[in-house]
Length: 440
Image (cartoon, rainbow, N blue to C red; front, top):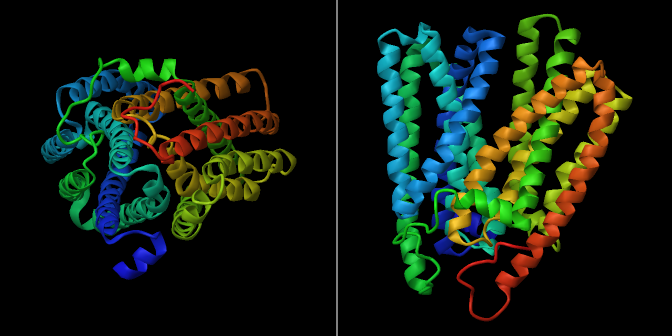
């Protein structure tokens, strides 16, 4: 098995150990989340439409508090030492929720609100921290070879979590499934500890002064991540890329929410279709991660191609949707777009942070992955609602998405060029710089 992986990933025996532990880390992380997600969504249904709107706002406000708090923790504690304690805190949260649920709290609207917000924030935060940790462990060359395989671990976790919940919810109930999620998160903690040991050995072997994540806390104030984003053209381009993705994703989500009930009246039939869509997305994602991503990202201009692929699919998809406004086109476009994001665009986007200094890998990246992403969702929802209130039809909105997707493609092309210049500078001979300039 390891020989097959070494050949497939073009990895050394030393790298295989880190890749496997990273695979297990991401698998257990997403499996644990997807065990919780159906419980969260069921509680969301209890709140109603108005309650959900308020809860989404609470998610955004919670992130406004979380980002500076995380920056403060990164300033006070070495980042590799911080992560196991941070995940242990989340395990303690899950144990507390179990105690509340055991006491009958699942019927309380306030408990439902708190749990919905917690799971939503938890998901955004821990996935962002995961990729920051990966960027801290691997250089750009390693990331291009290993990220596709590591991402496949997350995809398998995303498949396993719902299967666990569907298979055990009748037997265990929602309360005990919270403990299952806590157990999976504990596996992630073990993986982090093993990766810390691997990183210590790698740092000692290479004697690199820049790889000191085990010993030093991050420098700068708690707001330095936000300031980095505002000052850096490179980070600003990443923000524009992610905001464009969020804008078009929200528009497509709302179009789906409008069209499906009109086409399929039966609730059970809609649920079945949505489950089939999720299955198709995850299977296609896994195939792309295992057999396409590494070849694409390691090719000439691989970063640029990987970033441009999803915007190009979006241009074609919204054109097809505007010209042929039927559910079959909507479903096919949605499957391709989500699989392209999970398998290609997301892992390629994560390689953009490998050329940054440690402070930006954690602080600026956390700002981008949480505040920028969630604010993009909120703003996009308001824009869509405003267009519909003005009488703009769904087909017209699909046409409006075409120039937005073209602008996104231009942003992706520019960002890809910037990233490739930085990657070339990182790989050039000579003493390695201790940091990367914020501008450029």
